[in-house]
Image 1 (cartoon, protein in one colour):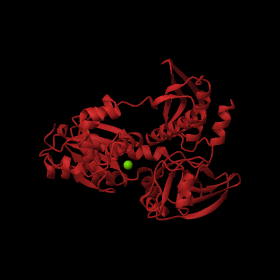
Image 2 (spheres, protein in one colour; image 1 turned 180 degrees about the horizontal axis):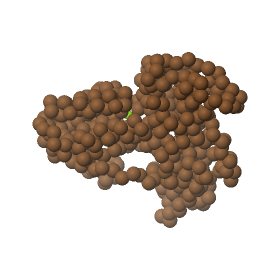
Image 3 (spheres, protein in one colour; image 1 turned 120 degrees about the vertical axis):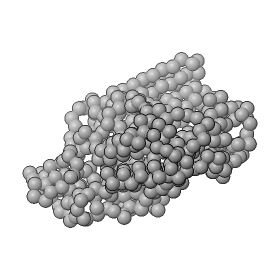
Image 4 (cartoon, protein in one colour; image 1 turned 180 degrees about the vertical axis):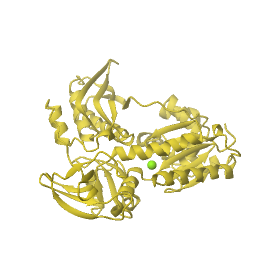
Length: 431
Ligand SMILES: [Mg+2]
């Protein structure tokens, strides 16, 4: 175990929404919700102003619109997010060669490799404050930083004072910090694990600490139970490893008993598709291939996959394909394990205007390949006379554009004809 709080975790605050508020001055201080705008879209990020109304990531867009109808609902602009993320990550890499990027807006840094000393509480706090200042200066965005003697503690600490937080947990304070927290604060403890623990009367980490190693592995299996036994005691010596690009994302679940109910299998498949898509979107990626893995009662394993002509990040499209693939396997005698995954991952930003809307992709799955560019709400446009703006609303005939950039104040809106020759969808970022 480390004896200095040399592991730093940085998390950009409400990242997608913050980039939108930065680039669209009229939305600063207002509720903003970024996510899929299709009928079954899911929230990727809500601004803090929208969170006040109970809007949060992974919620359905329909629910978000009911809770906060006055919010601006925007399609993601991954090119802008990746640019900001790249700058922040580069600044972290200047600090230390050991940076492990977890997602588009989160990373660990091992300060022991940074050459910075002393790495006591004040020294680490100074490094954290400096990196926050640099990132804000270069991107206009705020980040929250946590630091401690392990990845676990650093990650939990960065979440304690969001947004714009900075928390260094001194060595020796780890277990007192953890004890009152809900078990779900431990990364990797999801709903299924939390439910199982709650069944054993365990809700807080203090209660988790009272279970023996044998009780925990009995409840959760050897790997997960053993891991959790150590994490509950803040025993975490995982090292910071510069990460490889993920080639695929998948989730799978082994059932307590063989499942034969087709409705249950379909709803499980839908839930897994939603989860996989959420992780993919958070990583700034879209997928061309959807895969389903089914292990039957006799332990035979069957995988089916389907590759789309264009990448998608629509949960409903991934869910529909997963259901079709599941339907190709004979599950009537019972399923032990079901998994849904995506592969053929591509970063979505290269052509932010080429959002394939749901009907286009649905047509594509029906072997039609025509794709039509769509003006999503929030997309960047350029007008020969009026300059840079973004789409507030669009239909087949008209588009409402607000003309403003990061550097201007709030701009005015104009209604233009969709076929206005002076209007182009811009892939370049505003200066
Ligand atoms: Mg974040």
